[in-house]
Image 1 (cartoon, rainbow, N blue to C red):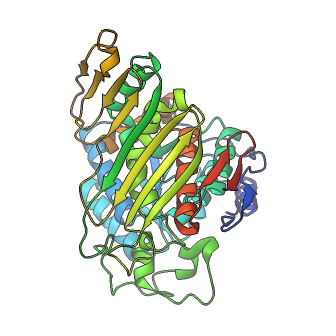
Image 2: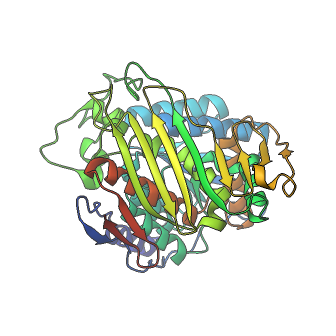
Length: 437
């Protein structure tokens, strides 16, 4: 990047530093200031040019993305190349770079400061796979640097960050922005959306979903501790903490690698697991139900007492369009709820890969039972990422967009507050105001 552009980007990045969530307040507004238009021209792919990708956060998920992109390039799904990685952990970054070279022969540049990666003019798209508390800042900075962005789920850690990122995306419409919740691309949810919008089940009044599994040794404890990590030598512990840095927080490898277990850095089951199910279900419903407006959560730490976040959660979400969604999550029992959307005239069943509509008893003569046969999707995450690559070329809007992801964050944030504070929370989508009930 030229010096003036580089100085402009770094100044904008500093001005957009992430704010901490307003925790414990009875009432507060999360509406951000209007988004800032970047002074840097968007990096565009020329016809016939290889899409050059940089990745921030090549840890577990990030390295998985790297190797999967190598496979996509090898199959010829898209003409892409990973050219740069950024991470505060040089061990993770070095291992990922070595794996990329082994698979594709690509020499990948490595940066401990992600802003150095963003400052490169030759990078078209940036994939963000950092921990949740860094998503907002990394995404905003990448957009302001003129890059197209694929941000892992959840889009942000807190709602105020989600609204800030949403405003930035809208202020820079020449950038492509995709949120990596892969089930958005499953045909059964797209079919359900069409059926609902056509009025086939009448008014959608009630839906349910879950993500339940059983991890006796403690969820996320399977992320191992590596003695090769040496803070101050090959790992920057202060930089990893970001805006949550505390000078009295001593190095803790468990917090570093198992951050989903800790309430300051993650919403646990709600943001890490349940967004997989809430997001596509809401996609099917959102044209009819609008924004979530009231959320209450219950549950607790029933078995995994060492984890700060909850191992059992149950959510009740109400929407503008007179609809209720119930969501169950657990890491102590694997039996979940059936994926189901209820209307007054019919129900849509989504437990298999197909979309099945069946009438309710009073409407058997009006609603025909039907199964929409959907193809098997061997790797829907790759397909969602492929959609991002294709949109980088075509400049079409990506499937998993910022508006949808922001609605999901309303649920995630208010549910998390409800779990910790023992109250229901209300959200006004017109004023972007949250109220503790």
